[in-house]
Length: 375
Ligand code: GLU
Image (cartoon, rainbow, N blue to C red):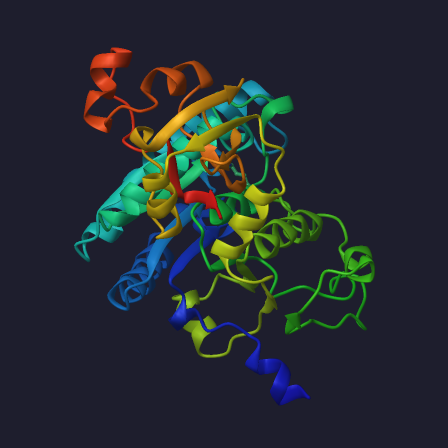
């Protein structure tokens, strides 16, 4: 049984698209500031993953911890305004540090600051997805953090564990690694209960597993086991396996490949299948009727262009789900549309090259992109 089980554990060396979450406590030392040796070693791990052909996204905390050190703010809780100010000062240094260590390997970086709304609002979600895809396509390693200087308490993730899971699902990653100050998921808090055991692999997040997640156990990191488990739920439902491991060792990703302690949460299917499930579960806000040529192109896996649409109905905004119908009115599938209903009505039946002349601004060539479509 044990051998069978370990077969289910993902291998980081086989990841196609990897998201790594880096906690503040790993990156920033209260007394001495940024841990440059650790970061330099992490960059080596990232460079190796890139050489293997893995796309890498880093979700890094540390802006507040770094900023408070730079500003010499006192120990203890900060006000929201103080942490936002600290984040502004810390983030710029954080991004620069990543740029420097990765540039040494010829790797380009980009800074991506997101808010909760960017993932909750479908239109903004599709936009950030497209941007991330473009960055990854260009070989860039995006360095992601929450936009702490603008995100207020009510509208923030607050912890980068869940943010990282959301990013992993947004980019269709197949593996997410949370580098943390604990070496995995335990049956109870190991600091309080000596009988606590660490899971190697969690195949399913059952109510019993949920009960085992305690409260935050580290002073500097925001997310405790509860937020990590929430992150795991988001990731695995999105077809992304997630690992929790202790990250303070130099080159933690190599350590993971070599069998370091960790807990893997097994993914439900793959990211593409999960995305299709997500689109499929949505209620259409409108309908697009296609001509025969478009039906043919669509079933051959192409995006839906405005030229192949003969009729548009319903009231929908950009990013909303719409039903896709055959000329006879049979539902063929569903997709997220890239134009509003008013725009779609104007450009239906026209070539993509005419979009700018009709709408007065350049838009995307496809009305529904094939990645956003379920047939
Ligand atoms: N976004 C915060 C920062 O960069 C950290 C949130 C977290 O530690 O989870 O300082």
